[in-house]
Length: 138
Image (cartoon, rainbow, N blue to C red; front, side, top):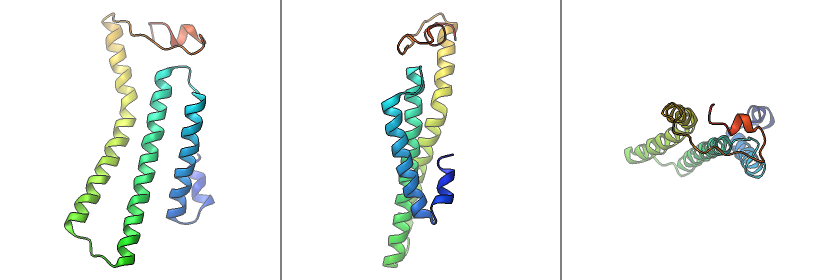
């Protein structure tokens, strides 16, 4: 929702990316101060997703800046420059895939540990929702 409003609020790719980066910074700082989830792991995973979103937007700004500089200096793109660009794009894709699949993988590992009767320590914030977040049965 917050990033879709930037399409209406800003005209042009550079201003949309800058607004997205600013909005992501604000929400990342708010998330770190508030910890909106009762479960510590959900807070950590949400923080990871916000950081990966920030890295993706920052990478988009770097791609845009590089294109602007190449156009300004009238530089022909060499194979080396294209390989560097592909490498950075691959890193950004990996970071997003990692952030997207980390929590489901964590839940699968937790289910396997519970099936093997290994009880992990679950974090409980302010003793709220003890039966939900602190019990060993999920």
